[in-house]
Image 1 (tube, helix red, strand yellow):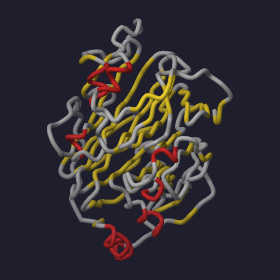
Image 2: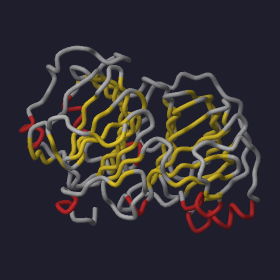
Image 3: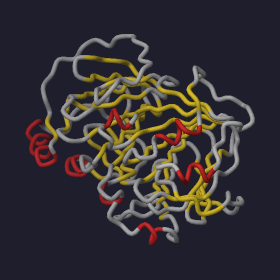
Image 4: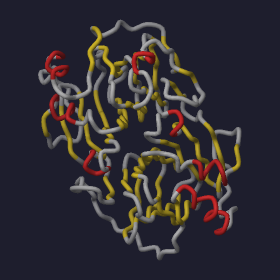
Amino acid sequence: MTHDVEAVHDLAPVVDRLPGEPVPYYLASGEGRRYELDGVLWTVIARAAATGGLFDAAYVSGGRGAEVPWHAHAVEQRSFYVFDGSVQVWLGERSRVLTRGDSLHVPPGRPLALRMLAHVTRLLTWAAPGGSLELVERLGTPVRRHVHSGRTGATTSAPQRADAGAPLGITFPDAARADALDEWDAELPQGVRPYFLRLGEGDRRETGESLNTYLTRGANTGGRYFAIDTLGSRSEYFVRHFHRLHTENFLCVSGRVRLHVNGREVLLTEGDFVHAPAGTIHTFAFEAHNTRMLGILTPDVFEPFFDLTGRPTDLHVHPELPADLAVDPARLAATDLDLVVVGPPPERGRTIGG
């Protein structure tokens, strides 16, 4: 991090636009910079310029038959999460049909291709250290609409893609497409390897009222980031806190999430996103039962928090028990987690969004 974390404490979150510097911001579902490329709508929700060069992220949506052709990134670690519909994914020599909640991870150098199988298919993708979405900005057409056009087929040529991708370390190999296998991918691998992961699988930790599932660990991304899927009941706020060394990103998959961001309350519903750079004083609470939230934290210094506050479990649903596994905030502060507690849980007030 290169910005002044103390200077971030009092910043009100920017609303429904991408800033050009690392400050807190909120995007309602569908908002962001939108481009159409080869029949696919890319909605950029995070850019390297706004995340201190840590990562970028976008929704990728299209209709049945829309494709993202074979491509490979020389540097970036990338992950994808299926938000709506279904998609066939080719990852090197393997292929899967993925549906809502399934995910995959793509290390540098690994070729990937996608084909949308449902009329409304949407994926979330994020990449570190970021910058590759410049390809979409260079080749895509800026659009005002919030849905894909329904067109399929390439509108850019191979030479155009090659020229635009070369400065970004993106290549477009010509590879064979294997048939999709009906495999139940349930384990995180050891180390930086490509993998698929089905909804509800992975390393799971239960607390009193929530189930936290690692979609990626730092060991899978070279320490660039980790991603956590949290499924839980209606809950109260945690202590107000901030981080000096890492950024947190909150995306509501279903239900309702309340976030307290530098003294302002933000309500997230499905598809809404909040970026909280280092220095942002924040906490969150679930407003509805069976709420699911995706957290992307970069770099991976906060990963042990979920091991410390939860216990391994074979559950695939969240428990509804008293929070008997809660850890004293002083103990958390004393552990090397990059966690600075600044006060008790806030009271609920007037919200942004929702």
